Image 1 (tube, helix red, strand yellow):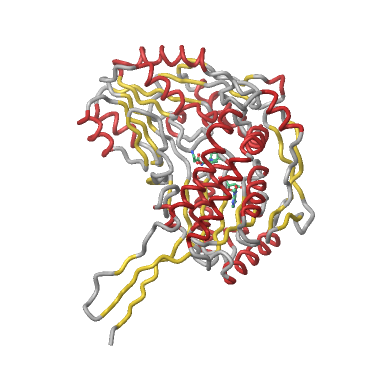
Image 2: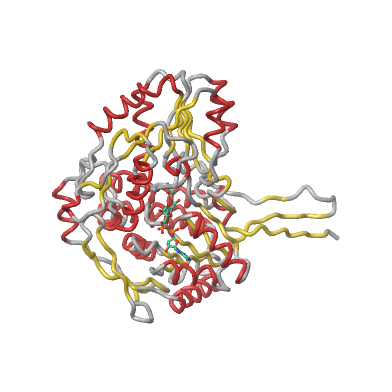
Length: 501
Ligand SMILES: NC(=O)C1=CN([C@@H]2O[C@H](COP(=O)(O)OP(=O)(O)OC[C@H]3O[C@@H](n4cnc5c(N)ncnc54)[C@H](O)[C@@H]3O)[C@@H](O)[C@H]2O)C=CC1
Ligand code: BAL
C-alpha cells in the first residue's frame, strides 16, 4: 500500500467527488441531444452512482464533425511533433496529479481494488501517455532505395478521425493505450467508454483539454454498445476504429466496416491463456504467486488472464498446495475502497451470473472443485465471487475452452512437452501465455511453439510499454497496442516519388 493511500484520504476523496456524466464534444460537456441517460452502478453495492448521458448516432455524428473539423484545421494534426509532445506530457502530469481521484472513480464504478487503481492502473495510464509523447519527435520516416534519378520518401501521416471503443475492465488504462499513440501521431479521436465505466474516461477528457489538447481533438461519447458503439462502427467519416473487448463484438466491427466505408479496424479481443509449468521448476513459491496473479488479478476480468494452468503431473500436487496456502493467506476479497483488499467485485450482476453459471456447469460436469465455487459477500448487494480452482479438467470441458472472464482457473495436467504445447495451442485464441522452466533449451523451444502474441517466461506479465500487445488467431486483428508499433495502426504510409530532372 502506498504511503498516501490511506482510508482517510480515500474517504475524503469520495466525499468531494464530482461526477462528469455528460458527453464531451468539441471541448464542452453537454447532455445527449435526445436527453436520454443511463444509470451507472457501484458493483460493490449494486447502488446507482449517477446517470450518464446516453449518446446515440446524432451525438456520435456531432463528435465526428468536431473531430474532422479539428483535423482539417490542423490545430493538432498540423503541429510539429515536439509541440504535441509537450501538451501530451502535460496531460500525463495532470493524470498523476489527479491519481487518487481517478483511482477512486475506477474502484467505485468498476469494482477494482483501490490499491491496484492507485498504484498500477492510473500511474500506468500516465506513463503510457508520457512514453508515447516522448516518442513523438524521435521516430523518423524513410527514403526508399529506389532508382538513381528518383527520390522516394516513405512517410507516415495521421489517418484522420479515429473511433475508439473500449471495455470496462481497465477503463483508464485502455483509454491510455489508445489515446497515447492515436493523439501523438496527430489524429482526432471519438472515444466511447464501456457503458459500465464512463466516469474516469470523461474526467480524462477534461484533463486532456486542460493540458492544451484543442477542442474537437478528443471527444468522449458515453453510450450503449448497440447504439453509440454501432454508430461509431458505421459512421462514414471515421477512418479507423480501434476496439478492445469481446471477440463477438470485434467481429461486428468488421461487419460495420464492410457495410460502411471500409474503415480500418484494429481488434484486441479475448483470450483463454495457458500457463505452462514444466517439471524442472524448483521455486514453487514464486511459480504459485505468479500463477495466482495471472488467474485472479483484476478478479480474472482480464483478456490476458492465465485461466488454464497446464502443469506437469509430477509437480501438480506440490504446486496446488502452495497456491492454496497463498490464496488463503494473501488474497482477500472485500470492499474495493479498502486499500488492503486484493479482490473486488465483478463488474455487474449479469456478468457475475454468467461466471457463476460457468462454475455450476463445471460442477455438474463432475470437475474436481479445489477451492471457491460460490458467490461471496451477498449481504452487501455486491457482485463478489470467490477465486475458484477446478483440477483435472479435461481439455474438452467448457472450463478449459471458454473465456469465463472471472476468477476461475482450470488445472490441466500433462505428461510430455508435446502434449503441453498441443493443449496450450488448442484454442481459437492466442493472446498471451506464461511458460515456466529453468532449462534454456526448453524455454526457447516452447516459447517459439506457443501461438500467442506475448509469451512471458518465468513470470506472469503483459510486458511493459516498450513491448507490443495483441493477439494471434481470434484474439486480435489489424495491429498492436503499446510500443512504437502501436503508432502504425494510426498512420497511413505515403510514398512520394520524385523524378529528378
Ligand atoms: N479485453 C477483453 O478481452 C475484454 C473481453 N471481454 C469479454 O466480453 C464479454 C462481454 O463483456 P462486454 O463488456 O459486454 O464486452 P463487449 O465486447 O460487449 O464490450 C466492449 C465495448 O464494445 C461495445 N459494444 C457492445 N456491443 C456493441 C455493438 N453491438 N456494436 C458496437 N459496440 C458494441 C461496448 O459498449 C463496449 O464499449 C466478457 O464477459 C468477456 O468475456 C470484455 C471486456 C474486455
Ligand atoms: N489486460 C489489458 C487488456 C485487456 O484486458 O483488455
